[in-house]
Length: 203
Image 1: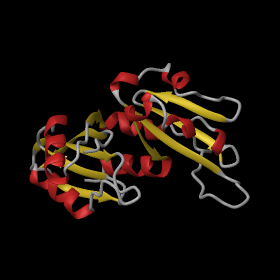
Image 2: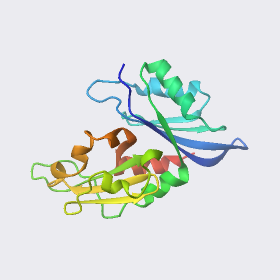
Image 3: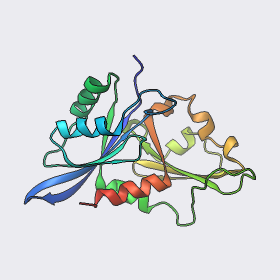
Image 4: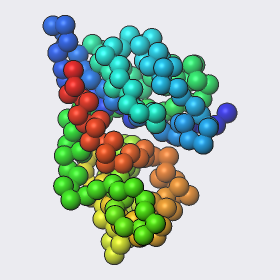
């Protein structure tokens, strides 16, 4: 059985039906890639609802979900439910909603995530959400930052990255997969990161 690298859950305080509740964003890493580790949207939603969560929204088919809970879910229960249903392990990380919104807000306004083009124009911009073990400012050096061709910005809980499409193949992320740090991060492009921050406050 192949273990799937981490899930990230993001929590924000809310009020639902007169009770203190919380919104969460769950990011599944390593699913629906090349036909492997498939997590259909409907099944993903069913697992979360089976745990008693509500207002569940699945955002695109890359393993992103937003939901509300009147109790704080634990990493263990999310992992156990997903493993029981899908048959592979998904570790979890819980972050506050305020933090996830702060991460999105820290993305420079001039960064874009342009589609690849034959002339290699445009930019590639991503958010690397960090697990606790590597959530320190010095992680940028550990990730192999190449300041001459790319930008990296550390904020609590993440590293923001930007590189031109021309230099993308030379960037540090291309070599990251072969390092121990790869399993300690989960990556989303800045478009998804901003949308998830919006969905935290959507209910």
